[in-house]
Amino acid sequence: MLIVGMGTCGIGNGADLIYEYFWKQILDKQIDIILKQAGCFGFCAEEPLVMLYQPHQPMLIYSKVTEKDAAKIIDAVIKQKLCTQKLLCKINEWDFRTSKILFGNGFPNVPLWNEIPFFKGQQKIVLRDAGLIDPEEILDYIAVGGYCALSKVLTTLQPTDVIAEIKSAGLRGRGGAGFPTALKWEIMHQTKADQKYIICNADEGDPGAYMNRNEIESDPHMLIEGMLIGAYAMGASEGIAYVSAEYP
Image (cartoon, rainbow, N blue to C red; front, side, top):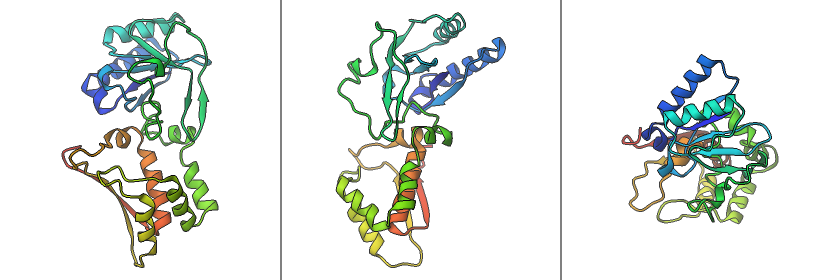
């Protein structure tokens, strides 16, 4: 399986052209390989990123891939060889938080992803899926444990139980105020109204605030699942995601 990072940063560096090249080669040469898109894995300076996964082997990550590099990757796959051109690192296993996946072991001379200086010391929590799943394919999200939390909430918890869990977790907003999420949900839950809405503020207009673009485009089902859980806790029956006009 070949995965091309097609986040905004990837496309800005030509990932869409690499994706088209792979697709044409697969069709023309009738290669038995799956081609998928993903969001941003987080190392925007090294885009376009291409991941190669073959059963029982580590996931290989190639960086700054050009059309010539893509041709060498395809040729190596056909010949069942390892292409070392632009090979950045590998992933043996991955903690999706909602599941853990072992890809495989091997290629001892290739560094692990978290041995790369940029990633060393990082723990991916909110961004755990970004760059590894197709953001436009719900089954990819479900495959790594997506919507399990929603299922648990709807089948085993009352709205007040959900709010208590959020309070215990200490979850806060990502804006400058860091407002406690549980308090916001509790106020909304206690408010009586015929119609309630849950709003996802994706305007991203706060100076100095954390920007959520990567989550929104790389893992949108995480956003939808979170909104559904919040809506259940607060008694909202309609959700709206507001995206600023300058971020198409």
